[in-house]
Length: 449
Ligand code: MN
Image (tube, rainbow, N blue to C red; front, side, top):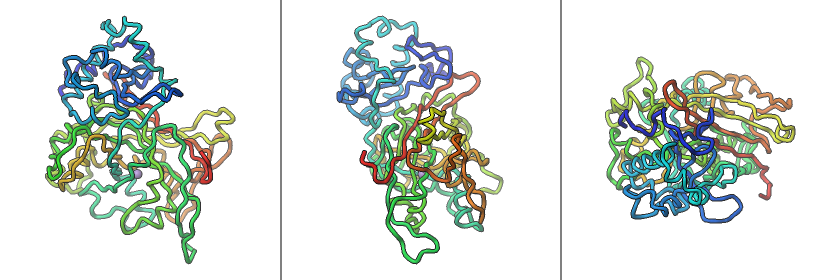
């Protein structure tokens, strides 16, 4: 990414409503992509960008000829209910469209600003927008890239040997279930499954008792690779489209009984919530930071996972939070409480390393595939990105519940709990950008909705 990319220039201002509001997630420097329609209309979903307090229908802009001269000119890739066709066009096309949108939305450009009829067709206030899944995700892979998370979880199960010997050599992951990805706002039903208490002789089947969230960041693949053609780490950048928030809901009791020897299965596949907006990698450029600094004595990754530019700029300085509001809190109009606060720069592996690793055996990635980072946890208790770690008090000690403003206590999630993830990037000399929110309410195992 050239340092002079004009789309992230902090001096840019937009005429669009709300784009200049203090603390706005979607200023003109962001321009995240999603899929929307007017709520309650049943009209087809279309590709859009978020700007200020609105979604901007890109299919309408395309029909109006506003992408003339860009690589998307000949085919309205935005008149689809998913971003895959656009994602697959590759980084040069993404940059050209972003550059065009940035010009159209800046305060001095009249084309859309002064065309009220076109604005009426193209703008959908976010308050009245319904989101679809931004991409048709063919494959979803969940990594385990936080060494703090891996160490904490490992400590619970293997106090003497928390981190397995492969951890510092390969980005560990498992294949997630793409069919149960849902977009922010969808309720999540408590799963039922097979569990076995430590003191029981046999397993039983029933509703999960230890339901958890996992605070994660997802990255979507743009251009894919052919089967048999690995992606070298120094080319990974060209294949990464953008990032969003991911809540990898987890049933800890089901997980504990099923995870050996092949890893998580039904404990994870019942639902995964993604945020509606995908922040382009180009919008993140001002917030790239060095990759995690390995401790003295840690092994260097093998050459196919090593790249000087990635060490220097492969991290993302992204702040993340988890908020919770119980049903009782919402009924009392109590504000959600923040129960976790972490930083994505604490991840041991970068997205480029995850992609290069994933494709290193020749496995083909397709446009719209998603990788989630794994739970983002830091070194302090309040930076732990799931309740499994958050309420853990140490080996052999009882879990420490989190107390809510209503006096309710949480060790794991209860029915009616609403979990909201947020994330944003902020730095001196750059305009703050946000990822929006990733929200879901837990409903009971026998709920009918
Ligand atoms: Mn996970």
